[in-house]
Image 1 (cartoon, rainbow over the protein chains, first blue to last red):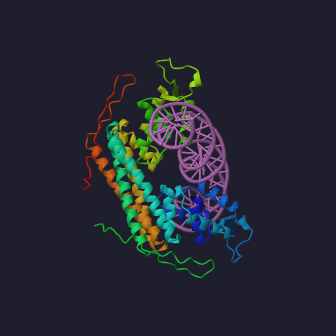
Image 2: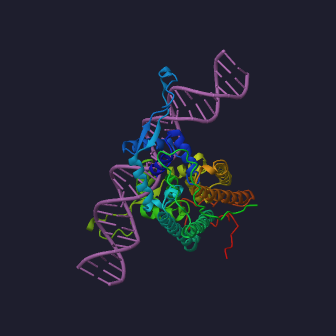
Image 3: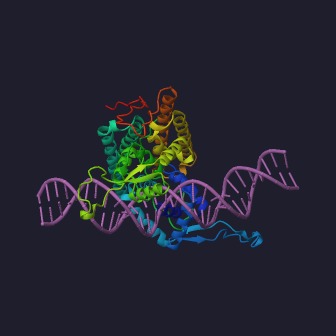
Amino acid sequence: MLEFAILGLLQESPMHGYELRKELTAKLGAIRAAISYGSLYPTLRRLQAAGWITEAAETPATAEEVPALTSRRGRVVYKITADGKERFAQLIAQAGPETYDDTGFGVHFAFFARTDQATRLRILEGRRRKIEERREGLRDVLGRAAERLDAYTLELQRHGLDACEREVRWLEELIANERSGRAPTVPHVGTAGGRREDNSPPPPGETRKERP
Amino acid sequence: MLEFAILGLLQESPMHGYELRKELTAKLGAIRAAISYGSLYPTLRRLQAAGWITEAAETPATAEEVPALTSRRGRVVYKITADGKERFAQLIAQAGPETYDDTGFGVHFAFFARTDQATRLRILEGRRRKIEERREGLRDVLGRAAERLDAYTLELQRHGLDACEREVRWLEELIANERSGRAPTVPHVGTAGGRREDNSPPPPGETRKERP
DNA sequence: CGTGCGATGTATCGGTCCGATACATCGCGG
DNA sequence: CCGCGATGTATCGGACCGATACATCGCACG
């Protein structure tokens, strides 16, 4: 999952670890706390070993500033390679079982702007199915095994059931919206290119809830 | 976390691995998919090494049935020890930072029937605080960084924000209920004791939502 | 003027948990 | 009689986390 997310972010622009973590947190904040350095750095190393990213030198222009005074140690900027882009394209198009669990789905969804519509639909439906199964499980427990469990556990299940029903509804909306034709993929930001103010991708759910 | 849950379940009655997994799934179904054997068995071994659980022989009564034909390999039943009960008591009373993340909170909550009221309150408030922080983070992103993100990512954040707000409200209700005096702890099932039909612990949230 | 502290930045280590896999038994329906 | 799904125990490699260590930079406060 981390591999996927890193490749996706570096696709947009080169970054160093710290920055990557911040972007990751901003993009995935809704689904996971904050990615740990204990995961990040080893993963970067792994990706580099696989040839999907490379280190890019820091401060390439204006080579003036004190070349060897205080040794100038510093930020390691990573950049995606051609192989990396290929890898990302492969990852974004496929949908295995891990694509439907909470984290996997969240990460894929976060990159939906670069996913083709057919795949988006496939993933949304797979996710819905999975949540529906979880929902049925909870209903079973609340129905058949209710007297075996204490009131707190039951309350927990009810809250979980509620969340499931809510997510299914959310997914239904997204699916309907997806099917309704619109939803263009973001126009593929060029490798070179100047200034990408870029996109304004599809409005996935027009359903804004007005809170008072 | 697994350690906590296993100790909690074995407190109620001895079980073998498979059974333990099923109970775990029933009790924690609302918060996590299904615990893997790749976690369960190593953890059981760890708990046994620590002296918190022991193996109990299978089929102690009616020792007749074919003693050594086909070797009678079989289910390993685990039973909690006195040290294990002590350990569980210690775990259930304390609330560290890991108590407030999704999984940690869920597991603690699932055993609230055996948690004293002061601790319940402490945990609920800690959880609320944590969710409020996450909520603020999401609001920040949706406010300040909105134009940097694509529509799908934004939709994900909105959905997450919605879930946060909902959970905070849920927690508020539980906290209010907790404070309102009621909510007795389950009367501590005895170590020996015959027939515990047991409990009917507090109604944590009287707030049932009538769905049409 | 210095000094200490919070943000930036890179990195490792031990431990928890997961997913895949393997293997054996039992009861039941075809 | 045979296969198949449920029951049951177990291991292995890998992903990810939390704690920890350490170094630099800017700036606020004494």
